[in-house]
Image (cartoon, rainbow, N blue to C red; front, side):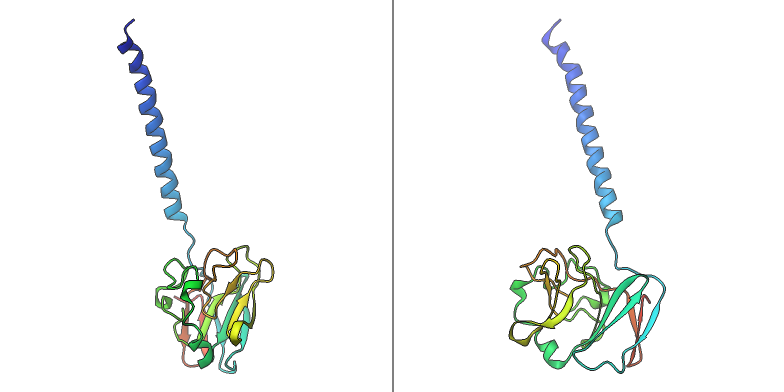
Length: 181
C-alpha cells in the first residue's frame, strides 16, 4: 500500500470531525440566540403611585416576581451621573429593558423607576439604602452587589448585569401598568 492510500480515510475522518464541530457550534449559537432572556412580561398589573413620596420605594408582586416602584427625588436623579467608570454597563447597552427605557435614568419618566427587585447574580432581594455621600443605592445583602438608583450594577460585586426592567406603561400622572406593552 502506498502512503497516499492511507491518508484518504484519515482526511475523511478529519473532514467529518470538522463538519461535526461546525454543526455543533452552529447549533449552540442558534440555541443561544433563540434562548436569550427577555424582559419578563405577563398579566398586566396596574399600580397607583400618586401617594408615593420622593425617595420612597413601593414593592408589589407581579406574576410571582417582586417589582419595585421608586419615586426618585431631584437629588436622586442628579446623583446618577459622575461615576460611570465604576459601573459594568453604564449605558445599559447589554441590559434587559424595554427600548424606551434605554436612557440614563432607565425609565419612561425620569422620577419613576420600575424594576424587578432581584439581584442579577443569584436572585436575592437587594435593599434600598443610603450609599457613599448620601447617594442612594440598592445593596444585595447576600453577596454585596450594589446597584445605583437606575438599577445599574457596580463592578465591585459578583452581579454580572444591571437590574431587569419589565415592560410597563404609564397611565396618567399616578398609575403604572406593569406587564403592559
